[in-house]
Length: 109
Length: 142
Image (cartoon, rainbow over the protein chains, first blue to last red):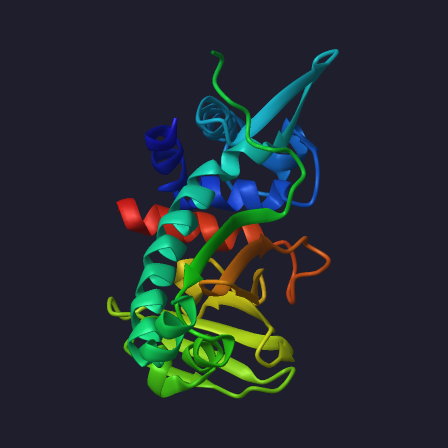
């Protein structure tokens, strides 16, 4: 799923579609109207985003509605989680190197 | 077991804790003094420790994080916004927020870090939160 999300995100137009959807649900036609590309091209992008779990689709009669899917943020979380893990470990090393070591150990007895 | 669903509607992106064998004063200085920040956060750092003041960190790969201080309560709590400076990176400054809380524990200081996504209305610009992160990720695999 994460590889699929990366692939889906690698295309600037698909990122632009996600940004458009960030404010709320839109019908396929409304999305297409905001971009200077053909309706089938937009449909294809939406299909890739949906398969990657980044957007979800809802059908109402003949209309299809799209919105961002919260679970699509998972790759973002994974990236930031690794980032902060590394940084906090580095912080620990630096802070402990600066801390006065002796008193803490003596207190412990 | 079915594929786990991510929590819905939570703005929390990352929540982590670490215990450091040093008093809060020392940990605080490591977070707020540029000379200390460059030892663990990035290769250059500048920070003006007042609400609204800038925080800027350049990482080893050249990417620059730009934020603004939101809360300062030495040596207990530091809150700042977080984003990439380069507009091509797509995570705009102001799109997310980092909250750092320091608490005294028997072994030293517990650092609790929360990285939150800001809603479109909270974000400085508009609905850039998603795009900011997504663009960055896409670059990582390009």
